[in-house]
Amino acid sequence: MAEAKIGVIGGSGLYQMEGLSDIEEVELNTPFGEPSDIVTIGTLQSTRVAFLPRHGRGHHISPAELPARANIYALKSLGVEHIISISAVGSLKEDIHPLDLVVPDQLIDRTSSRANTFFGRGLVAHVGFADPFCPALSRILYEAARTAAANVHQGGTCVVIEGPTFSTRAESFLYRSWGASVVGMTTLPEAKLAREAEICYATLAFVTDYDCWHQSEESVTVEMVIANLQRSVETAKGTVKTAIGQIPERRECQCATALKDAIITSPEHIPAYLKKDLALLIGKYTE
Image 1: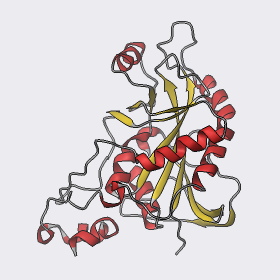
Image 2: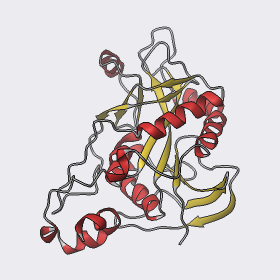
Image 3: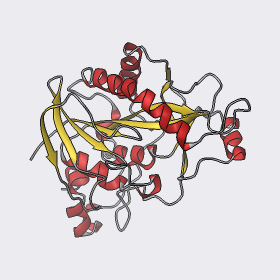
């Protein structure tokens, strides 16, 4: 089976990845259904990379309907150890301008209807999530963005809302009062699932608008988002390509052992079908 150690999940505006050679297209199925689309695997800078368009080619999957568990499981099944997530966000701060890039280091979860764990149904696991993004991978993304001459912000809190509607003005002011930097719709539950799957995960967020709080700017519209997406996507691609070349072979962060002490259920009490379905994630801890 095809393998890749680095995965890229493309968000709005990024549905394919140029520059790949020796390309394979892989159709996958998982215990959680099919992922958003076919996974494209190719070589970039001597590294095998798996690319998955989050919303599917043609952008036909809404944020709340994304098969996030299937997406992360599918990438894990290919051997992926690092995921670079690309997403579009709105700015909640005056000094974070449209067309800027942000590599956030914190999250606030405002979603309400999404399956956000691989566990449950007879298997209890409590994974640490105090720092939701891999610090090593985030640092690489930030430096790569600087190399690409982008106006990039290191750190900051991303509020993840349910969508698909944008925030109300009251909500936008609320998120600003919390000190949040940007607002988006897709980083969760991806980040939680990646941690459960012991995959390093970091987000490169490109800013398309000022949400709706800014008094002297037009409130966010789809037309505005699309226009700025088209202007930002090449910078995002360049940043990702540079970052991929900097990711080390050996992982020294805690992401790789996130499940080590997280599984509370005794192995003999884990249902057999779960042991089978989740062997990819828990096998080394339950055998």
